Length: 252
Ligand SMILES: Nc1ncnc2c1ncn2[C@@H]1O[C@H](COP(=O)(O)OP(=O)(O)OP(=O)(O)O)[C@@H](O)[C@H]1O
Ligand SMILES: [Mg+2]
Image (cartoon, rainbow, N blue to C red; front, side, top):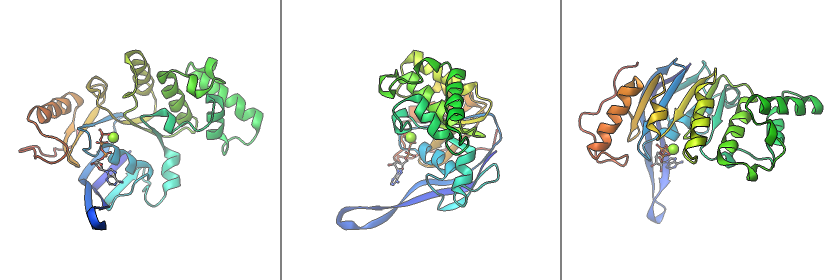
């Protein structure tokens, strides 16, 4: 389960003349998320990626507490990364080897010491996701959808308990988007995903709306989306022109 207790993130930024100030990326976010599929929506710059990055210790809370199955990623980053698989928007920022098979083998190197066994497991992982045929193709020659599915396969190879995906379909066309959505939504693991695709968000069991670094709405996906549409229609942006009346609400 993912738990956020009054979590805030503030980072130092430097302005003209080297003057340092503090920028508030998240403020007082509280949510306990046992649901299988949780979406995070919000405008550009509202804090969605920041929220997701807290879960595997890519960024740490400056106040409050984050727990992933009882593990605090700020204290035990390694433990958190073993539990949380992170899928990035651009699979090329994730795939470091030249072919899907090599990439998955790299993920498996600590778990499976024997080379042959590791290669066989990598092939099996790709086969399971319908990617067996492209196992030895250059990752640069894969379609965007194939690349994202390989990226997901790489993450799943370490058998994480939770999958966190940051706009995993943004760079994809409709066909590939549908494939990646289906793959993600069909996972047995808990899935937490940020997206601007409101149809994708609508399929979550629960959705969080982030606005200006605060939890603006937390509840069933359909209600969250209509809350978000309302915010956007009222001209509220991430950058701070205010959202009169928008409040954090209780859990789903
Ligand atoms: N390390 C950092 N240092 C300074 N500012 C940062 C840092 N990381 C994020 N920000 C700022 O925090 C705000 C929230 O960023 P974040 O990436 O979480 O937004 P987002 O909701 O994911 O946006 P998008 O939909 O565009 O991906 C932005 O204004 C961004 O510039
Ligand atoms: Mg983002």
